Amino acid sequence: MKMNLKKAMLPAVLSAALLLGGVSVSAAENEKVTMAFCTWTGYAPMFIAQEQGYFEEAGIDMDIQIIEDESTYAALLVQGGVQFLATAQDPNIKMYANGAPSRYVLAMDASCGADGLVTGADIESLDDLEGKTLALDTAASSYYFFLTALEDGSSLSEEDITLAEMSDTTEAGLAFMSGQVDAAIMWEPELSEALDSVEGAHTLVTSADYPDTILDSLVVNASYAEEHPEVVEAVADAWYKAVDFLNENPEEAYEMMAGGFEEVTAEDIAGDVEGLEFFGKEDNEKLNDTDSERSIRAISQDMADFWMEKGECQTDELDEFFELLG
Image (cartoon, rainbow, N blue to C red; front, side, top):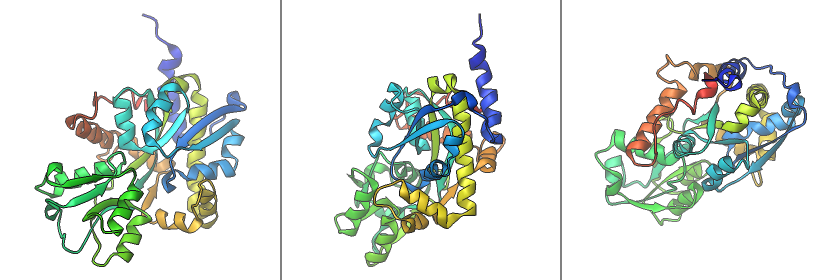
């Protein structure tokens, strides 16, 4: 049986390059690459990479597309409409588990308080949600956070609560602030706005209580990764440089990050960053350590097992998903 040498070498090559940085990609001269993600601060360091010329230096012509409809993401990967996709890890897991040809590249950020379950004064515990109406977007990563919190800290099941399905998390926050629902799963800036504007509003739980439930990652189309390993290496290196720039020059970085989105200000970015943890090179090294209880594989396996049990995944085997890490 012949072995595809290029495929056999790819995990080892990428595993080293993704962590060491400083990748030379002269072979990728003027390589046109498309990356997609929605409007969210966690992905915005990619705009730093673009503005600082990190992609251009690597010979990459990077086209970043803002696509708010996350239901199209899997199709874009399948059809090759985008090569790289940034979204939350549990949707990435579900897309892969249901047939998307995606491969994990790196962890981008984690929500550490930027998402939360906000209720009125009469609801003091998760058990008090019984019979109440909760607004949420079940397509958002915060849905996994909510179900994890409910399972861990309540005697209730999802069926004990009236769920008001929203088109996005922003709409869920607005529904709570307008008094249409008793509680909502929301993220910034609506989370802070609700706490400030609704009398008695408070958080029952936030992503700070469950920091491994909402984290974002970068994935790549599997065929593209096999054909262009040098580009995958360079994109990862550009991200690490961007996170370093953000840590060293936050005010300048916020302007660049906001500039990539419509109707987002540097002040908005600064507020969101307070509830986020960005993952640079050393952070990813730690997450890739399989001996760690908080390894990305362990976190992802918990997600896959959870959604498999819920009937949302066709498989919970993730070896191929992580093959670029070796």
